[in-house]
Amino acid sequence: MSTVSFFGRRIPIILDADCVVVGGGTGGAATAIAALEEGIKTLVIEKTISLGGTQTNALVSPMMPTYVKGQRVNHLIIERLHREQIETNDGTTTCSWFNVETLSYVLEQLIIERGGHILYDANYVDCIKDESRITHIIVNTCNGLAAIEGKTFVDASADAVLSRTAGVRVESGNQEGENQQISFRFEMGGIDITALREFILSQNETFCTINNPAFFEIAMVPGKGHVLESLFQKGLENGDLAEEDLRYFQAFTQPGKPSVMSFNCPHIPGINHTTDPVLRSKAVIKGREMIRRLANFLPKYVPGFNHAYLLKEATQLGIRESYRIVGQYVLTENDYVARARFDDGIARGDWYIDVHSVSKENIEEARLSRGEFYEIPYRSLITHEVSNMIVVGRHISSTFLMQASLRIQPTVRDMAQAAGFACSYSIKQNIDLNKIDGSHFKQRLASIRANF
Image (cartoon, rainbow, N blue to C red):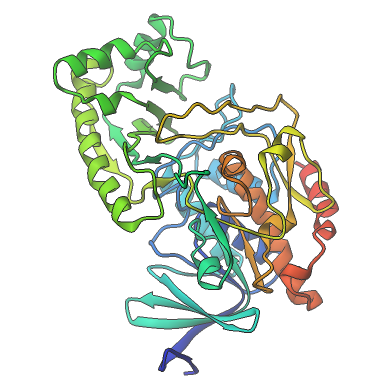
């Protein structure tokens, strides 16, 4: 077996690929599918044993709504969910619904069927470079350290771990260095969705406007006039809840799970640095306490939850923002307002600037009208420092505020389509990823989008 030197040790090279994807989350899995459809040997390195990242391991469903027409990979995923009897369209909103177990399975199958490879339970450790090129990455496996050899590399790690170890400049947080709010999601089962829906709508709740009875959403934010606020206040007065439990509450039904809802809460208070491993651990402990309070409160106070129980907790924190690379172009909130267009615009976004702030700072929400969008340039996915790496996910090159728009899952999937194209083009044309003129992809991607 071939080996590579790593800090004086000979590390076995266990796999090689044309395209090595670090991270099997929303961006990584979609990039792999796109690259495989271009006919290049592709390997996904995933630290857990399921694909989907934040979508599946952090229980983040459904996908937030967008009026932008998705790319081919996005449609492949949705079509396969339908084949698995998972309805994704609620008939009212433009959300894409799923349940996490089915999505993880679908992503895995789409990769394996196309001849792709997945290395599960492999934690990224470091990379080996030859001048500006990454030649190998080092991962920690059940058998110890191992090396992966590649021609192109995709940083889909969400925390920019490949980029940072490769020497790429990064930024984090707002002007004060504070990151967005962490969530710790959970699911409850045994819910009588029909009774819950009837109760909510009987109180003239205007928040949920979904007409399809199979899809339902509840929420409570203090001062917003939500039906559930009075029940939460009673829970607080009776000592069943703490003040911090009332800050944000939201839950969605799960297609394919008739009595289950996924909760987009709690928001963990007081943790304003998501890049600190000690604070992340504290967030898990704090979040678990809050989950238990909510899971005990709901059956006592909310109709429809009478026989409900805690089904599972997320196996990954809901991190909205940590590191962002400083790439060849930094996308800003000014580009959002200007509905920016670029010669190398390879993806489109239209989600509002959605900042979940720890400090409750007042941030004016910029929103685009239906049909409006901004473009994400290819240059925001590539760096000056590393020639054969491309970045996909919430950590592409942008400002703190702009990241709060582009981080949603449909937008990340469309970035991934372009990244898969780019890795194939780089190999077949023998040109570095960070030297490619992204305008090569814009027309092709627009043509694909028009066919859906």
